[in-house]
Image 1 (cartoon, rainbow over the protein chains, first blue to last red):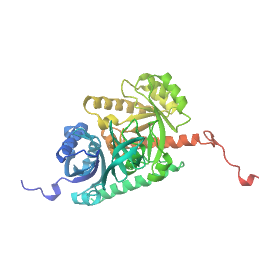
Image 2 (image 1 turned 180 degrees about the horizontal axis):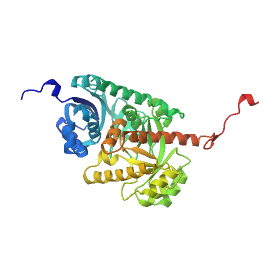
Image 3 (image 1 turned 180 degrees about the vertical axis):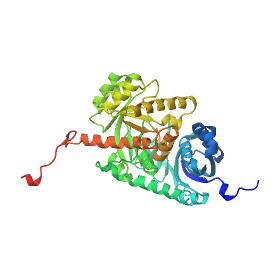
Image 4 (image 1 turned 90 degrees about the vertical axis):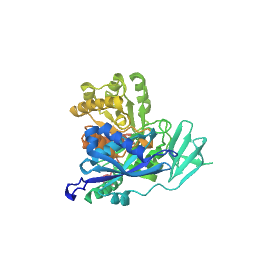
Length: 161
Length: 263
C-alpha cells in the first residue's frame, strides 16, 4: 500500500533496552519479542498493548549480556517502559532488563545507547566463600556456578585459586 | 523531538549525582533506594546488587538479609551507593517476632517485619520499634482501617510490594494487584507512611527507579508516590543512623560540644 504522507504517520519512539542473563543462556530475538508482547498484553491488556506497539526492531545477545531497541508509540512510552519492566524471563531464562534511554529514531537510539555490548568474558576457577567454584567474569561482575544455580557476585567477593 | 533522548540522558546523570544527598542528612530529598534479598537467601551478593544499583540509578541499597556478608563502607566508597544493613524478621507469630525485634533493634539501622498474616501485620504496625511492615498482603495477610491508623500513629512504614506485579502472572498477579489497590486506598486515606520495593532476589530482578515508577503508574499509583516510597528507605536509614549515633539523646536533643566563647 502507498505509504502515508509524513504528517499522518505515527510518531515512534525507540527504547534502548539493556539485557542481562546468566552466562550460557541463549536468547533469540523471536522469543524476546514474544515475551515482550506477552508482558505488554498481561499488564496493559489487548487495547493498551496494541496502542503501545512494543515491536523489537534491534536485538543482540551473547554470553549473558545483550541489548535491544523496542519501538513504541510516542504517547505510550511510559506504558511500554512498564510492560518491559514486567518482562522477567524469556523461555524460563531469567532476564535483567533496563531501559537505557529513549530516542526518536533508530539511528539515534543505536548511536546513543546501543553498541556497548559487554567487555571480555573470562571463565576460570575461583574461591567463593570457602568453596572452589567455576566463575564467569565480565567487567568486574562474576557469575558463580553453585550446586543450587548461579550466584551473582563481583571481583570483591572472590579470590583466585 | 531531540528533547526526548536529551531528557532521558540527563535524568540518568542527575539520578547518579543525587547520591551525594544520601550522606548529607540535612538534605530534604533522598535518592531512590531498593531493598534487596542478598546471598545466601538471594542469588546475588550485596556487592553485585550495589554494582547494578549504581548502573540503574539507585542512590542506595537496603540489605534485608541478616546473614549477608559485606563491608558497607568499602562498597560505598567503591561504587558511590549507600549501603544500609537491615534485617527482615520472618516469624510465625508475634511473640517470636517480638523477641527478634528486641534482639536486632540495637544492631541494625533498619528493621522490618515480614507480614503476611493478620496477627503479624497487626503486631508490626503497633510497634514503635518496627520501621517497616514488609509485604503485608502476601499469603493470608490482610489490611484494614484499624491497621492503617495504627501505622500512622506508630510510624511503621507499610511496604508496597511490586514483586508479584513484576514477576507473577495470571491469577496470582491479579490477586496481588487487588491487594495492592486495597492497601493503597487505605494507606493514602489514613496518611500512613509507606515504602515501595520490587523485592528483588537477584540482580536480574532489579528494576530501575524510572521503570518502577512506570509500573506503578500502570497499576494506579501516582508517580510521585512511587518516587517518595523509594526515597523513604533512605530517609528512614538516615534518621535511624542519627538516632544510633552517640550524640543523640532524644528527638531534638543532642549532645553538642561547648562553644569556645562560653569559656
